[in-house]
Image (cartoon, rainbow, N blue to C red; front, top):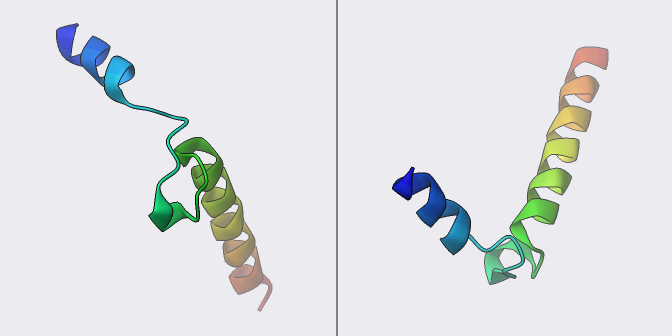
Length: 46
């Protein structure tokens, strides 16, 4: 329980890392997931 609490307290979902183009992690992951899904559909269609 202490580990889960520490993770949720210390993980900042609003942080803007430079490697993600200044996007918060949640937004960046959403964009990446969408791009991967679209790429999979293009491969299936080919």
